Image 1 (tube, rainbow, N blue to C red):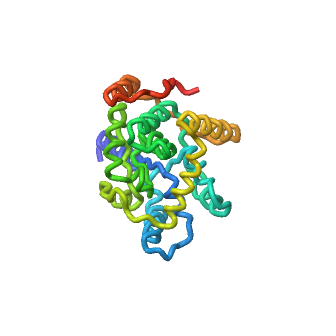
Image 2 (image 1 turned 60 degrees about the vertical axis):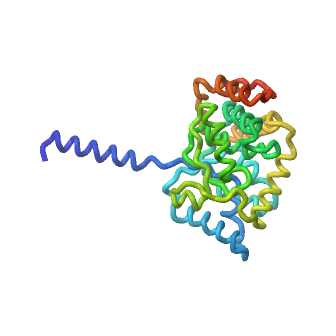
Length: 265
């Protein structure tokens, strides 16, 4: 093989290997961890979701770059202590996204526009964080506010208006199949999901506003950093983020509760 041709061949091989090494980024929402670590259920629906989640972990774990945030770590720390330990062990070693004022602004926008209910601020946080960081997927079993086809259309519109490319919201099954989410708005619930909803409701009830939740997460963030936990830095917001946000508030005739600074402290 001629030297130049050999060099070009070797360069292409290297580039192909580098491209192949790029894994899709996946934000793992709280409910997925709960299904992953819970005991096998006799309920057929619960068991099917448990098996799908375990299949993702057992067969496809190395195909994706799984990522979490402080809100995930905080939510899975709620409830039975033994269950908490199992959930925390499941996320040990995961990359964790840093706090972002841009995500806080997008969270407030999702709440104000009705894309996510006022009493589910943490769910809005999950969506905003994954979107602001530009992750490819957000996996969840939360059919109420996240992997809900009707809600997702609203969520995607708000994110696009704010200048972001919406993250693909899907279940572990959808991620494995790599198909578009087509779940009904309100699929049957089950005991595991009910417990997750209860934990989320209890957690969100502690806060009267996004500002209170953000203040709480800021404390969690500072504490974890003091303990030596490493975070992925937040990316800068889109150039026209504030302009697009103001436009949406004006078009929808919604009063903005608070002007948040775009720079992180």
